[in-house]
Length: 208
Image (cartoon, rainbow, N blue to C red; front, side, top):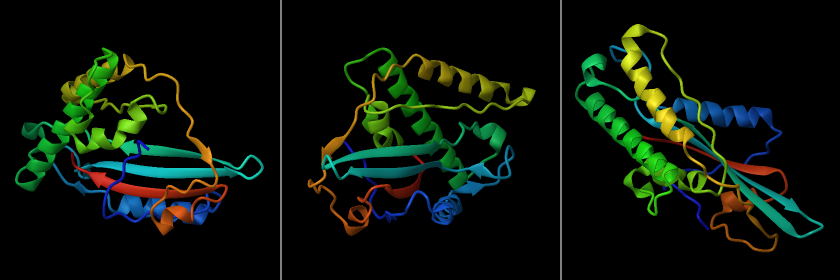
């Protein structure tokens, strides 16, 4: 059905109107975010973070259900090892982060040029976000820039990245409507989230 799943994760059903439950899940996601201290940042992100919210709404009278998915993706910034002073595992993390950002740039370049092949499989990140970037949904990206002169090269790279994204046209979002009797969920956690207004959040961090 075009969905993307990561193994060994727990899908937790919750009521969207339950603020305490929502906050608990968000705090859990933040807890597992990988960070470390470098010469550039005391709490430098050492991985990308993706929070996925699966939504299912059921219309009893028409016997139909509408399924949707929201990805909140916090990308780790590109990093120059000379400035960050990262070494050992942190250096490997930086290389992995930069590689996946390059893969994401290549995806946007391919989409913007309307290429016949879009290299989604070149990175776990782009593979995971394929449904959001392939015309099945809408995507909004916010670029964060440093105001300092010493970070001008990083800011320029970010602006070039944003320029590539701005050239992309994903097309109209598509609805995913099914008969309410169709049960294509494989596990109890997802199944328990099928009643009207239910949602199932999943959070994960990926370095590439």
